[in-house]
Image (cartoon, rainbow, N blue to C red):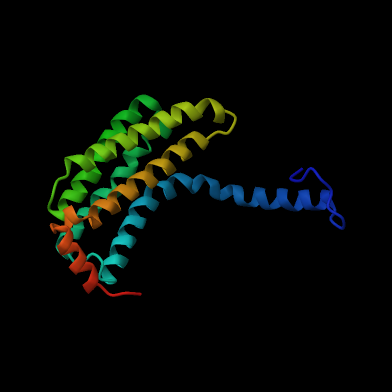
Amino acid sequence: MPSQHHDPGVDSETAYHSWYRANVALAQYSTNQWVIFCVGFPIAITVGMILTRMAGWLEHLRIERMLGIVLTYVAPAFGLSVSAFGLPLAILGVLIAASCLGLSLKIITSKWSRDHFLRFLVTGFTCIVLVVILDPLLKSEPGYTGAIFVILLETAWGTRFGMWVASPAALGMSDAGVDSHLQATPKF
C-alpha cells in the first residue's frame, strides 16, 4: 500500500487500486528514458545557448561557430556506455565524451582549455566512482544505477560547459572588460 496509515474519509483499498492502475498505464513510457537521457542534454545546451544569445548575454559568440554544438549530440552516446556495457567501457566512454565536449567548446569559443577538459574528465570519473559506490545499494532497482550515472554526469558537464562558454577567459576579456560588457547587456 502506498500509505501505511489510515486517513479518515479515504478508502485505502480504492486509493491503492487507483494508484496501481495509473502506475501501470505510465509504464509504457519508461522505455523512453534512454532516448530522453541521450538527447535531453544536447537539446538543453542548445536551447540554453540560443536563449541566452537572444537575450544578449552571449553576444561574443559568433553564429557560425555555434555549429560546434553538434558535438554535444554525440557525447551522450558515449556517456551512456556505462549503462549499456558496464564499467570498463564507461571509462572509455567518459574519455571520448569529454573529448567531444572539449572540442565543441574549442569550436564555439575559438579557445582550447586544457583545464576545462581535465575537469570534464575528473567529473566523469567521479560519477563512475559514485556509481560503483551506489551500485550495491541499488541492485534491487534495475536501471537506477545507469539513470543516476547519466543524471549526475549530465548535470556536472552541463554546468561545466555553461561556465566555460560564459567565462571571462572564453570572452577573451579582462575583469574590467567583463564588467563593461555586463553593464551593456539588457536587464530583465
